Amino acid sequence: MPAIPHRAAFARPAAWAVTALLAAAPAAAQDANALYTRALAATCANCHGTSGRPIDGSEVPGLAGMPAAYMIAQMQAFKKGERPATVMHQLAKGYTDEQIQQIAAYFAAQKK
Ligand code: HEC
Image 1 (cartoon, rainbow, N blue to C red):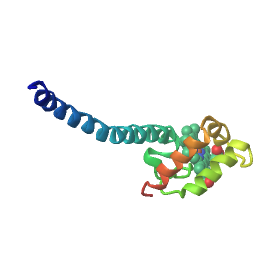
Image 2: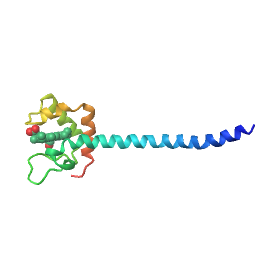
Image 3: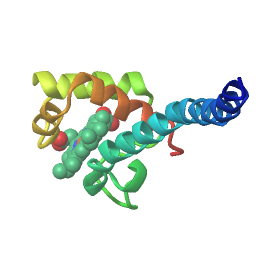
Image 4: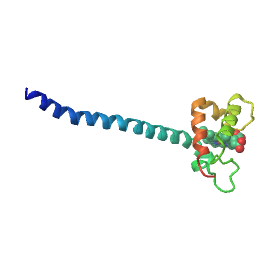
């Protein structure tokens, strides 16, 4: 009979550990997703500037604060060849629709 209280005493901390791990998992997944989105958006920085803010006098349009729906529409138009471009029609083909949505949401949230 003394085995039962002992087992219960061990089981409780283990249960807390599992609960703590389960609670931490969604946060870690969110961090990974945020990092992934930033990495995607960083592929635009060479031309559109860090965080989508081009340097003064740049002819490349800024992306920071661009409404997501507008960006998605432009990226799709570039992808399909409906909007003529020098580089974007090629670049846009390298991103899935889901990635474009993620990138658009990221830049829409940046201050101009
Ligand atoms: C190699 C340089 C380069 C890179 C990298 C680049 N762009 Fe562009 N982007 C341009 C240029 C130049 C234009 C003007 C259209 C053209 O000539 O292609 C443009 C135009 C755009 C426009 C249209 C803006 C408007 O006001 O209508 C959007 C949207 C856009 N880019 C989004 C992106 C996104 C999102 C990325 C990253 C996934 C990206 N670009 C990466 C050079 C670049």
